[in-house]
Image (cartoon, rainbow, N blue to C red):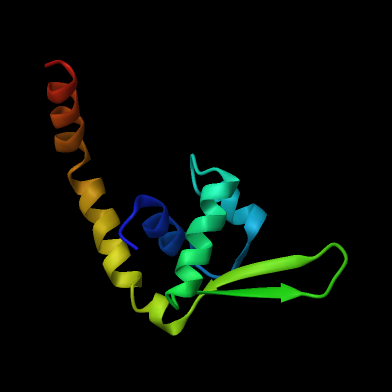
Length: 99
């Protein structure tokens, strides 16, 4: 659950349920395969629920469970920390890359 995709998916789903395609559009840089694997892992851990609707075309939505909702504050705090320290992170990356 500590990988970057899981944290991003939890943060995005904290705003409400989403279909796979919409979620894929909102997670920058993730491949369909990696998003599928991430969602499966989060579902297995009890963080996300997957609801399939018997429609044509099929519709599947992903939503945070109560356990997943309990991560909302933690994920938002982490995102805020990254935002607050972005300049320092960029400086450190630049220094590292120029060595």
